[in-house]
Length: 89
Image (cartoon, rainbow, N blue to C red; front, side, top):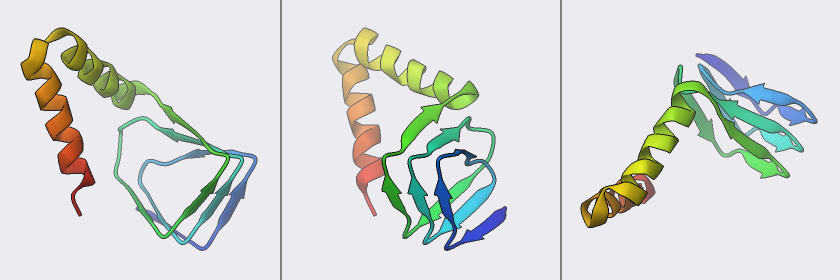
């Protein structure tokens, strides 16, 4: 993974795959994630950023939406439980 330490990214598109961001600042950026590699973010700040999910990451979000909206109460519970697990430290 590429290590980015205390960098400032401003007015650009940042591809997040295979990168570690430590105490970086993102200002007026588009942050793009396609799900093709790991990402780590620690102690970063975000000001006026736009998050974009493409490729497999976008497909995963669309699949989760389909489960939530089309698989009845069990589908809703599955997605809600997934978000509960994400919120845990």
